[in-house]
Each structure stands twice: as structure tokens, then as C-alpha cells.
Image (cartoon, rainbow, N blue to C red; front, side, top):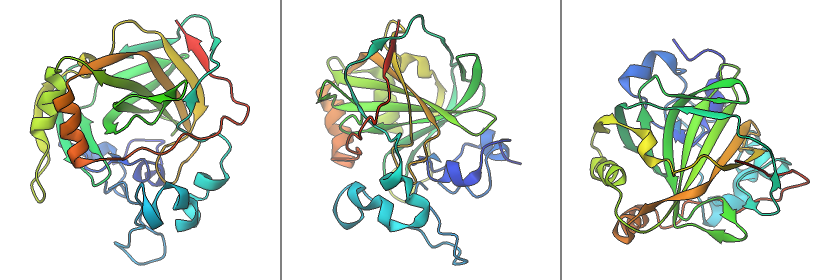
Length: 273
């Protein structure tokens, strides 16, 4: 049984869905082998198990994604691509975001593109009156979104899906400061190669939210192949502190796993307070 309304091809290309915790297995399309990311897209050419290899640099890097497979065409041809540089934001009025995350068991996966935390059912957000269920969150180094041209050391993308199949992703910047205990528990649960997913009990995603609810809003895309333009982006204005040692620990695994910023192409970035 899969989560209704969410095409397996979309979830399979969201680097976000590598392994699905047991509590969600009956709700995610069987075609998803990876979660928001195995974020490697399986080519529909009858060759079962054939994967389209992509990366962040070199011959399969972000500049080449659109040429790797027809299903990745939006990476080149899309007009609402993400991430973007957040600049020139306009006042957007009061926030219409309600975050209803709750503690639950989780699994930590290294999918070859990032570290993914697959969460239990029950956490969700309401965005402009629509419901989106939290599926998982993952990390990029450096941050994919920038603010006035400056990147944070790391950012987190919290990936939510609506019943209709589109996504809402909340981005949180991680800046250098004091060590964060929740991040430390995730890092310690990262499995070694060949090991099963790391287990976390009663993980509270809210511990990784900054104080205050102000955020930027804009329409965009997945930041991994196939770059589908189905994402309502919410990027928090405030950051969460982590230690330099915690940043270095992630960087040792992923020295660079961020797509470069993309043109706005006339889109408006709103700031909601």
C-alpha cells in the first residue's frame, strides 16, 4: 500500500527517500528504493536495477544533470528551479504556517548523497490551509539556499508531502556555535557501510527548529534530479547553532553536496512574520 496521491517516480527522485521506516512501509510506493532521497533514479527502460548515476561534481555533476536522462530535463529547462539566493524579499504579511511535529522513532540512512532521517507518521504542517505530512529530513553542506550571496555551513531540508502529490520543504540553516544534542544523536546513529539503518528513539524534530517563526516563501523545485517543480519552499530566517566539530563530522562524509543557486526568473520571495 502506498501513500495516496504521491507518485513513486516523484518520491524516488527526491534524494530524500532512501530507506523507509517500518512504520511507513505500507504507505510508500514500492517503487521507492531510496527518500527524499536511493535518490538515484531508476531508468524506465526495462533494465530492472539500472540506475542513473548523478553527483554534485564532475561528469555527472549538477551542471550535467539535465543531459543524464530525459526524466531529468527540468534540471536544465525548468523556470522555477531551486535553490535560490534569497535577496530582495518583500513583506508577505502574517505567516500561514503551522508546524505540528511530534517526537517519534526514526531511522538514519546514508544514501550516498546525504544523511537522511526517516521519521514516524504523525508529524505534519499546515501551509496556507493545506496539510503536508513530514516524511523525512536531510542535510546539505554547504547550505543550498544562500542569503544575500552568503551560505551557511549546513542546512536541513524537512520534506513534507500533500495528498495531491506536491511537496512543502522547510529549510533551516545551521550556523557555528554551541554543540547541538539532537544533531549529535543523529551523527552517532549514522550507519557504517553495509550496516542497517541507525535507530533513534523519540526523536523530536522540533528541537531542530529555530526560535521564532519568521520565514521566506517562494515556489520552486526539488534540488536533486529530476528537479521537479512541485515544491513550496519555506526557508526559516533564523538559524540553529551547531559546533564546528559537528560541522566537520558531516563535511568528512560529504565535503560538498549542494546544488548551486538557480535564477529566480521573475519569482517573488516573500518574508512572512
